[in-house]
Image (tube, rainbow, N blue to C red; front, side):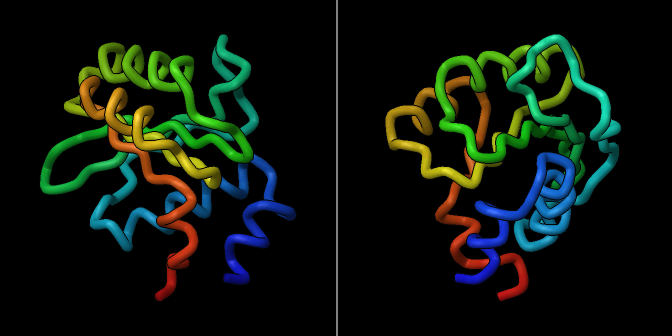
Length: 124
């Protein structure tokens, strides 16, 4: 798929975050707020937050370009769920996330959308 090659090789973190914002429409999520991509929080691996809504439920979003998802990303998202007082979290990555990490995230109220979602493209 041409889109995933572009994501992997030519996008920076800001472009990836914007691409993800477009991808949400495919999954029924609608953006509420996007952090300024030029600003970072205290966690250097946290690549720009978003708030989205689906069926009148709010979620926090963490985008991770070219980053393997592990405990650190789950913990950061869990903290954002508490800080932003939302129902759950979404972690978006262009890497594959293994089954165990997806299960661990799920127990924290976090959904991981990984490379498998990107392979279908946002426009198909």
